[in-house]
Image (tube, rainbow, N blue to C red; front, top):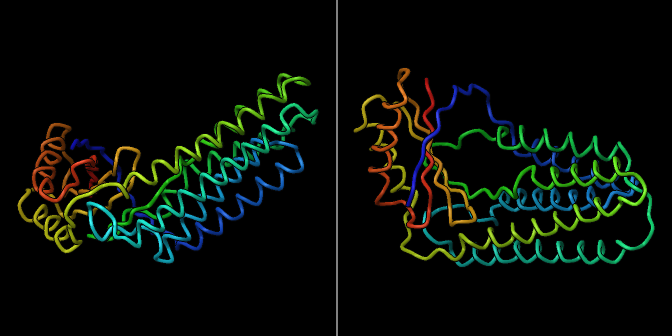
Length: 283
């Protein structure tokens, strides 16, 4: 187990409804697909596939079929099934897109246009800056195993490949094609990361126990007014995010001391393969 802490500024924004995020992602997927077809950009089409996978995972989580972490160690059998289905869909889509890219790589085709690069750039801003902020910290004791498929990394690859293809001119269409293959490789990697939490074995820790531990933090650690947390899958197992709101500004040494105390309180219920990320939020 390991832990770290991050100081955050107060966030007074109210999280937007999940359907807003779903609608924004759906519009982003359509925009990438439409421009990718029009501009003959395989990288942007692969990026659209990555965003579509992200949207599908979000919808599955909101309908209750995606792993919602009632426990911190291991997933229920039904959740394991849906995790495997999601990972299998990602792998199938990735290999299908890669097969198409390899098939047309040596076929002469026009290079992508500047419009496709602009769309990839806008996607990076939206995915990197807005996606996580739409939700905000979860409610006390509610653990949501949100899966974030590398966020803006596919769009970054698409932008690099498209830019190289445009700057290089005729004969550099391969840059766009190889960027598409790189995005497909990312999807396979995401599928592997998605399966990691399902392979975690151990006793079940119910959310009531988490609530008790979080309440213990506020009662026993001086200066803490609220503790919130959620569990998120990662390539190494899982990440336990803990938001700790303090009553007054603290020095870095004081924040680190509070993070150490929070780790001590949560250690009995922290998964053995998880990383504890304590975020200090000033009131």
